[in-house]
Every structure is written in structure tokens, then in C-alpha cells.
Image (cartoon, rainbow, N blue to C red; front, side, top):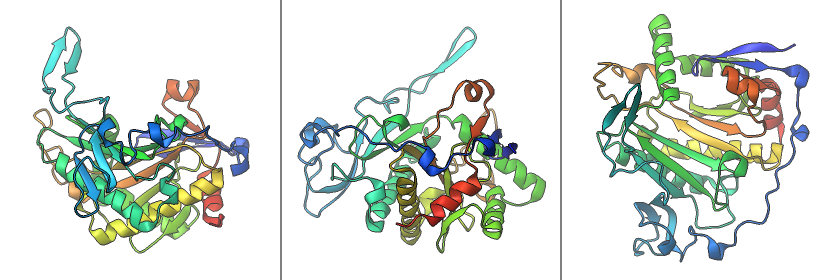
Length: 344
């Protein structure tokens, strides 16, 4: 029997439709065509001149910027959505508002290996990638005009990846995006009503039920949310309250790397190389907004950061776009069971 489930943080509804239940083998395996050859790839070691000058890199000692010897490299996007040089000036055009395209758009080249992807990474390699995310987030927030930094990864063409060489992206914006603003608002509402953090309560509930848990270690929980909008969606969140991904210690990064690596490996094997997106939702910095003074005051008490993994094995269609609701044909309970039991 199908049912509506309320996604509290995103303030939307999901229809879980077990009558349309789809098991892992019901989703077609994703086999991508031949990858672009390394000699034509702008992210290859020795091809550094094909990309903009690097902003940040983890390198072998003694190697110079824009030369081989890097383990992870960060460069500006060659075709950026936003530029730091653009002034963030608001402008009115009759009933329409615009703001100059200020911000930052960076590419993180995850690995020098053309054929390696995060589900193949070691824990140390994954930790290094998370370290780069953390350091770039800290650096971008050093510009007071930046109000939000979103770290995300697209894997596979259906998920928006235009180059096969593994890479992530970072976009910094002068406004807090709508979805993040909704999560902030909903988290504050729950805290005001109950005096507790919503995700702390969700983590306790999931650990108590254990129906949707995929994996846990000392610090992090991997589970399929009760209100998953996509089949086999997973969330990774700290078991202890924490509002800011950029404040993670190196030891916490290691344990997050362990959780993320295992989640991606299980997803890769269960659904046979599915396309996916993952992104990090962390608290905006507590900066004043003229129209909403003190809006982010106390955010460290009620906001709980998380990393979301969204497999792209179902396509939102007319109902989803027209209603803002989602239909999920695989129950989170079934998805978690398949993921939990797959042997790596």
C-alpha cells in the first residue's frame, strides 16, 4: 500500500509506492561508452596547461604549481557559472530582480588517475578529497561577500558529469540557496518547538529501529532516509551534533571517508555502476542579513550538517515537476536491506 511520507527538512512530500516496487536488478546496469582518452583530457598530469592556473593542490614535496606531482588539484572552472570578479550589485528591471553574477566556481580534480573513481578510492584517498573540500570551504568563506559554499559531485552523464575523469565541483554564492534556507528554517522551527535538533532525533530514531541503517562507525551513520525522494538514496551524518562540515578534525575526516567510501562501493555494486550526485549541506556562516536581522543567530544549536547521495536511477517526470512531490518505487527499508547485505 502506497503512502505519503513528509520530508521535514526539505518541507515536501514523497510518495512511497511499494506496489511499483523495484529491486536492484530491475534498474538497468549503467555501462558507459569508451571514456575520452587520457591524451585529450585536460585533467591529466602533464596537461596542466589545458586548465586554468591551480588555486590549491595536494602535491608531492618539491613539485611546483601547474606541473605534475599533484594528488588532488583545484582550478577555476573554465566555463564558470559565477565569477569572483563580477560585482554582486542588485538591480531592478520593472518587476524582475537581478544581481550581478558574483561568486566562485571551482573544479576539484579528485585524482591524477584517469580511470579511478571514488568507489575505487582507499580510505586515505577519500580522506584527502574530504580534506580538500574542507580547506576550500574555509578559504572561500574568508570573503565576507560569500554567503554559501556548496560542494557537490556528479558521477555519470545522467547525473550531469561532462568529463569522465573523476572531479568534483564547488560553487560559492552571494545568497543562501533556497533549499538550504528551507533546511535552516525547518531546523529552527523544530528546535523552537521541541528544544532539540531534528537530525539528532532522526539519528536516534534510525539507530533504534535499524530498518534503514546501511552502516555506522564511531562517528557517522549511513542510512536511507524514511522519506527518500530517490531509490537507494543515502544520507551520511554525524552521530553527535555538529553544524559545520568545515570544523571537522582530521580524525573525523578519516571516519567520514570510511563511511562515504563504503556507501559508494555498496551503491556501485548493488545497482551496477549507477550515476549519482552527492552534496554536502552545511550551516551558512552566521552573517547578518539586512532584511532578516539575527536570522542565523544560534545556528550552531539547531542545524546539523549532512552529506546526501542521490542515485539517478529514476527520472523526475511531469508529476514531480508539476507538484513538487516525488514518487519513489523502492521503499527505503528495502533499499537499506539490499545495500546492507551486498558483499563487497
